Length: 306
Image 1 (cartoon, rainbow, N blue to C red):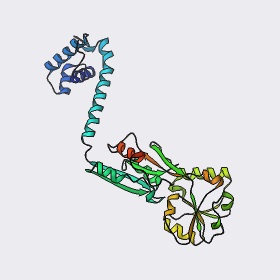
Image 2 (tube, rainbow, N blue to C red):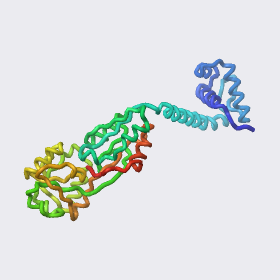
Image 3 (cartoon, helix red, strand yellow):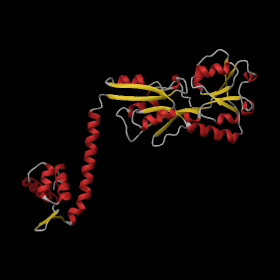
Image 4 (spheres, rainbow, N blue to C red):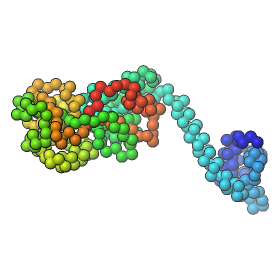
């Protein structure tokens, strides 16, 4: 026997099982009652079992009908999902895809994949926005951004976070500083220095991570608020007003009077790096090809950041 059943019969059965009245079910299905009666009889014939009992008291489900109902509903839900998925890809030849990037590090540190994505999907509007990591996470959660390059250790509840790369920071200090002659700087070198540090509200997750590590290694420098702009920060460093722990990508930012030195000792445990964040529950059709490009389609130029 052919087990194929027209999907409409599942829907007719489900509506009748909910209403237990042929007339009301027919009206919900926008058909007349005789065709509905014939279709239910056809379904019962195909299955070889009665699904409803008809009597003076009305219509009721048989035991077979009660067993069939949850499976029929599951079949209809899955069919609706399949249709929605197909239609989403039907409409995937155009739309908008927005990628964010944290502004804490130099833009050259971001995997350079957007041009390649635009070439593959020319009808899409593909854009990018730079913000602090915590703002990027909020934008993804609110559905106004599809994915973002955020700093490692940023709190991103509900999102999928794909770490890309991490490395220790660099120390930025004045070229006339007594420590500028050293090849690498350990915690003991910096313990008495004034350290520029970002406001906690800008990235509570990374602040918690870094301060916990500082406590573990006994590193307690004097901290002073860090300017948001890289050039202002480096200007203050050049004036000798403090030192800064910066992403390695910022070594490309040249500033007269500033030198960069690697960290050594326990400070090498402090990681600065990039992760890709996105909401797996609300994927854009472009998300999968975008991730593929990030992971291997184009070699990233550098990947250090907060």
